Image 1 (cartoon, rainbow, N blue to C red):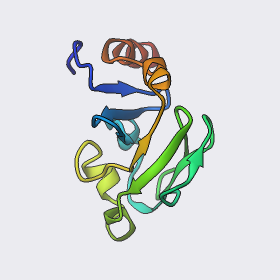
Image 2 (image 1 turned 90 degrees about the vertical axis):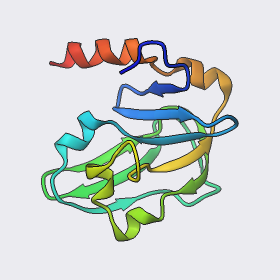
Image 3 (image 1 turned 60 degrees about the vertical axis):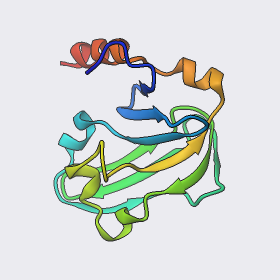
Image 4 (image 1 turned 180 degrees about the vertical axis):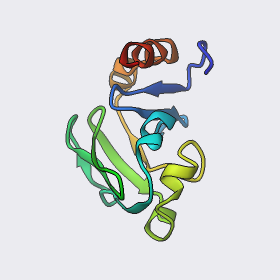
Length: 128
């Protein structure tokens, strides 16, 4: 994990957020994906949905755990990963690639409130 990355941030709920220049792409981290086994469904809000911080961003139903993932900040959903409706295991098998959840708009001040790579690394160590 690069400690100097400026285009990736994290949430304490184990989401990665990538700055795409004008919008962000959001997915789950490898740590969260390891909790899941066989993923049955991934429910995402439709494009155009405004979420407040803490609102449900995604619901993942898996054999081992059902997870409700809160929005890390206020955001406006632009697009969702439609591939997850037919291939929900992508969220577990390729969380940083084809298993991304959605793209959204968020305020720059909210971006700055997210964890940088060094802060996320410290969180992971504290959770061990």
